[in-house]
Length: 412
Image (cartoon, rainbow, N blue to C red; front, side):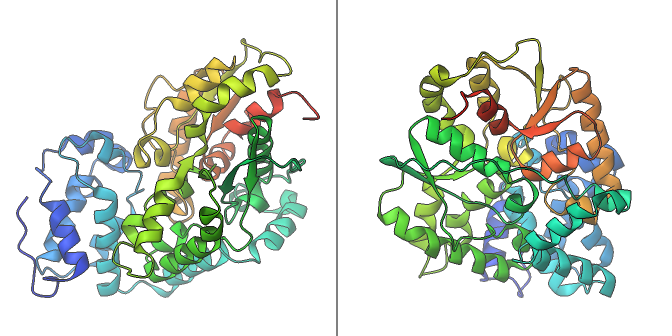
């Protein structure tokens, strides 16, 4: 696709990056077949091809409108289109650029600004933990829509105390320690059972995704730099990897090198951080032989684990099938939905708050397919997906590492 950038964008990093991405697009429309919002709305402008057309117009000098902004806002950034695209269009990076440009030109209503500010500042604030505890105390009194965002209080369990020669860093996350702390401790216990010590850098915070994808890109990059500073001494000491048990954080940290590529003070270190970052599932192949003898008993093969692969895992990180295969090797009966397992569940970070009608429609559609498997439990790999799916079903929704942790011998 040929683009003639307007003088405003010629020579700018955003303009050059967008032009390079647009050049790859052949406008074939394969992406529309796998776009969740196009599936729901049937509007070309609510699919990747239509959004690319809108962004191209803006880059060529057309004035964006609130309608332009709305179509870009409706995008889940699930990157399913990237998995489908025969030309390798880097849509995720393009829509980040497009949203940044459009938001700079199209003022939002005060109410929208307030909600987006509360999300980007509140979710990443040290006050989030105490606020979540308060919400859990009065959870039964909360309106249904708010109660869906406040999971029941969870026991975090024991953090292992053994020291091992093999060490990995783990990002605790901004909301996970308060909402579902057992995911982090279960991760540490599973790795401990395999002879690996989990280290959390106290000064590392949010991965930066919340602010970055709410168009506070400067704020997001500041968080990324702070994490690099917190992790770097451990990197110099030789940690094997930086482990992510939330695939949304994982896809972001794996892109630090890209996002900070023009920062002379951080580019090289950011690239190294991205290189070291692994989703927890990527460690599974090497862990299976060590963990198999540590199972207290074989998992009940009659109990189906319905696995929902998050978009950030299968499309963002391009990791597909690993969790299912390696849990199966450990005796679990794991199945993915027979239909639309590639589609987003509607969580998508803050999307379910900003676009609830679309998000809950996608949730119910996803749960319908998962329920066909008659699962004893639904498993996933991202806290956003887990919380969102749990709000629509009585079937327990867990992180897969929690299931593995429970299967290991007690008292390890």
